[in-house]
Image 1: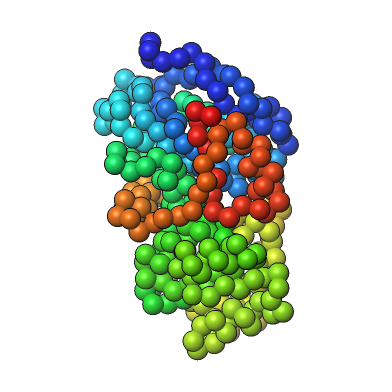
Image 2: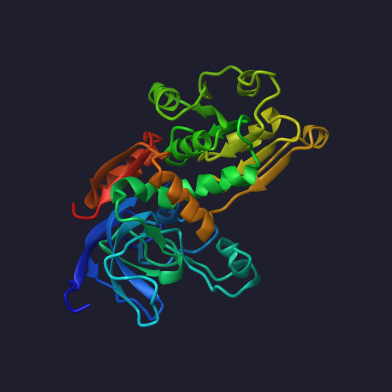
Length: 352
């Protein structure tokens, strides 16, 4: 630690509701089972905006450094860490740490641990130059991979990959991705395509339509703002007119969560990933019963899911769109996110 700076630049939420304050704070020291990662790039997730605004019924720490898609280099480690080397490339994810000994952790469901450490929520996250993480939970990143491009995979990529696995969709089957042009949706399309799943993209705007159809592998695009009947249009997009086998919901408002059960095909599965503030799930009981549909929540992936998601990227199968801006510009990114003006993902360069 002697060669490391004592202070660093960070984006800090000092009170619920924000704004973020770009300021210098101390560089933390890793505990016995922790590593210190020099964050080079960090993706910006909609969860980070929710954390700043205090939208969810889970208290954040204050003051708070947000962020949970950080990619960088290990520069220090605790005395109990023997499987991570200084200089290794590592990712700091949403799940910063877990107890490792509860029923969930022992069954590879560590995201459900009752005592989780959550980056950028209950512990300081990746919108800073140096970030602490439990060594057991960092993502191992091969050194030949670009850290800016892989940053969004560390949350958005892992999360949607897990959702696709939970959906049970098989190669050749159809999945509707709601919020397809956003950060999670753009990655969901990439993973679905790589898994051999056919895609119906649901979003709004000509830029998102072009991106989904020409860059991300969607075969159909339904603009929910101009469609006269979203349910019928989604069903008509499948060759037999029965609708998709699964729906991946990464939308940031409530209405799509109410529609999905109406257009998914019989025995289809609706996967809820997005977390609109204060939203509720509602589905027509009659149709849900006679169609025998399943409605499931899907949280972030476990350590195995994370390794698999990174491997898809390493093999060149994931090329999600992103734009790099400086760490100092986080406020601008939040403004665009709040207005729904982001196609793909913003990635922060911590040196700017």
